Image 1 (tube, one colour):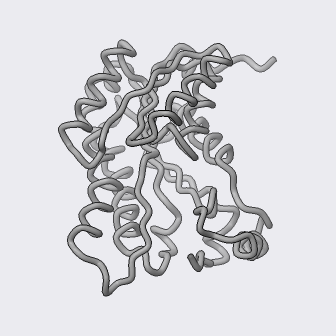
Image 2 (image 1 turned 90 degrees about the vertical axis):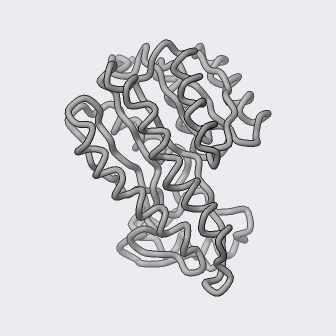
Length: 253
């Protein structure tokens, strides 16, 4: 059996948006690697408890914490509660995000502010609040960005701009927090398409990708773990997109 890397085993992690989809896969994998995991959720309490139960089934330790990440005070309190219950923090993974289709002419203050607050501002607030604990542990941060920051989707302008800002935040924080805290990002491409995408569209997207398939949540979790386990990498954004950036395609939904 492969030895568990010491950098993760016995460590403490906070994963946002960990009740479902990518965040759940990441939290489960961190639990398997021997980390204690604070599982954040916004509205999916039952799903978050299921994530914790799945981690416990495999011998891990996890607990769920709620917070509305559009509320900056609640976001800071989330970090404080996680640090208090975990006894410190070695890894912050920011997976929670909004994704909203909106035509350019329909972008109003709400549409803009909601995406920017959730997908750019809250990651900064989380990172800033977690920094003292991460410095003490010489830990790291992994943001989930998006390949749309390089090859934008139509009709998702606030989302694409917020994710582009998050990519730059990754690099800026890597400089600000070095050498004590590493900051990296994983940029998913065509992974876990929205439920509104039909089977024909999914098949079309897969055919157009150089690797010939859509990505899975586990593909993203593996990339997050790689960055968490790599002590000489900071300021890096890994594109996990099956070659989408080369093909320059976008979903039609």
